[in-house]
Image 1 (tube, rainbow, N blue to C red):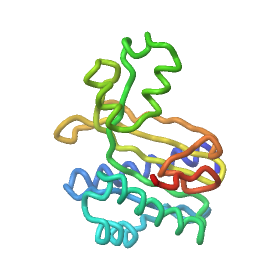
Image 2: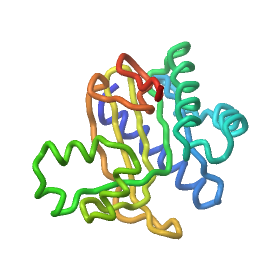
Image 3: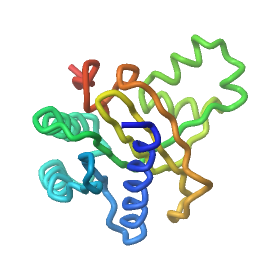
Image 4: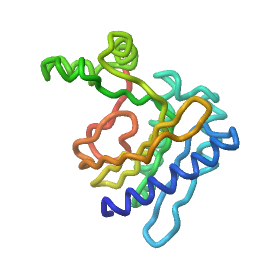
Length: 185
């Protein structure tokens, strides 16, 4: 899969999530792609995860671990050419005050947990906004595609895109390869 193809899949999935938001029905979205076929939204998987883990499953570490582990297992058993996951998320951005810190201190803050990120907001080191966050990934590449939105759901500016090698990607959203997040002990 090329970066351009992954970005196209991420954009499609993000637009589906936007439509769900406009209807007041968005929780998360998961879709698979097999070469030569259209993007396939996995509605039954979405419904099953929400039914079993609850509407707020993305707001607690334990249920996020379980939900993404289920998706990872399904991906390992029947790997699609690409998988796309869209969630609503907080997006943190560095302020000038943060950029003035030594690089090691910046990395320590950026690679810490969600609570530390919010403390950094209170300290004036980061700003926070809501966004839709789409991660489209193949066995070798990852496209992170996100768009900020304002209170009330109005989208703010154009989507942004970042690419990386799958081997440089980690965390709960990693669905292919080694370095998969295994949850907290």
